[in-house]
Length: 239
Length: 365
Image (cartoon, rainbow over all chains, first blue to last red; front, side):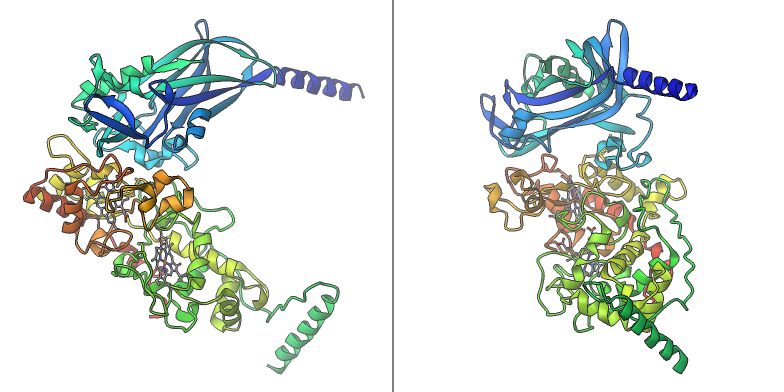
């Protein structure tokens, strides 16, 4: 009998400690020049031509909350897929939610994630993963680089295709967005993370001439790609 | 003989009796328990670079399951007038295509789509058919039998025929352990067809052997390979963006610019868009694997190109304009030698060694 009470007590304590956890939902919203990004629609660009975007997606990795120097990892890899979301204004406004649970309740001061596949995982290949893993996507590996493709960004400029594909360890970037995030018991706190796509296309203070250079994916011509991945830090903001 | 007939009739009377209170009496058919049921699992040897083979837990591969599917695949009993089988549009030696622009069913009515290769089906997990409208091989296998422009039969009549057919009584019993012929169903037929198709693999072409270091490409094909996958120091042909190794497809749906439209609603065949309802998906089709492309002419979902030269010329042109033409389809500047090299590479993707597996070839020959 005593034992049983002890057992019950143990369960109760366990439950109590479990319930001091909450969740965070990262709400990724894609915009263009501050407006919700609707793929396929005409967007003003350089003075002599407009563009439309048709594809924007990327891996986020080592997703973590920060508290001072403490880093609380939430997920090793995930995929933000505006391509299959932002085809209506409604979807564009709603954005994409990636939710992570079992986070200790408390106040955190930022969110951190990498864009792409971290070097430690970039020695693997899509075929190494079960179809349930975002890393199994066969279209996100580039044989010539022996690297995952970290992000795809593509569209048309006056009817002509253009695209940026990033990849290779040199182009892996980690970002920390400062923001107070309060996780409370059994609740989901939402952090809106806005990615402005026009900001991604700024090169040397002007917009990149995608009509002149439509294909940007050559690891030997890192210039534009390096610029592109560095742009993420100014293109992201949190609300 | 008399005894067994007696046995069967007693059995039927008894079972009918037992079912007096059931709403619908079930016709159990003949007992099959005298046929041995000892399933032996079949393990597939997957090529080392290929993804993990994921098999539904309710349809594990067995020798006898595959054997039943193999018989059904090649047996014209599947069509209403017993003239056509799956293999009438999917020839094993043509990587399971039929070399027609669009396929024609038993009534001579031509469809609107070209037959598809059935190799490496086990890995196409983002939707089957040119437009992705079917989720699994199990689901797919139910469709051709009743399709009016394919086998134009109906499953009720077909199952009746199969239930009375001694060979199929035996094959179903061995595959699934059913006890009576009345338990032979279209769902089990579909499962067996799925098992059969899951083991058809192709991944030992000269290209694969070269990557494994056991063979080597000709200089021309090597140049073509470098262009295909945009390796540095050769011109980029951009093909590998969509036709990714090892499957030579990225398992997505794309618009490769074969049809020009001004408005997204103007596509006559909306393809993937008909499934998703997203207008930006209109005119998108499955990126087909290029494995065995040498054997599968004519090309594209509607068989519009007869030769690989025509296909390559299409890509060089940058395709026809449309608001959702894939951004990776851009004009290429390949000269005649480079075109020939690219083709030489495509010809290294052939591997029909699956024909050596007697569970794959026509069992009636």
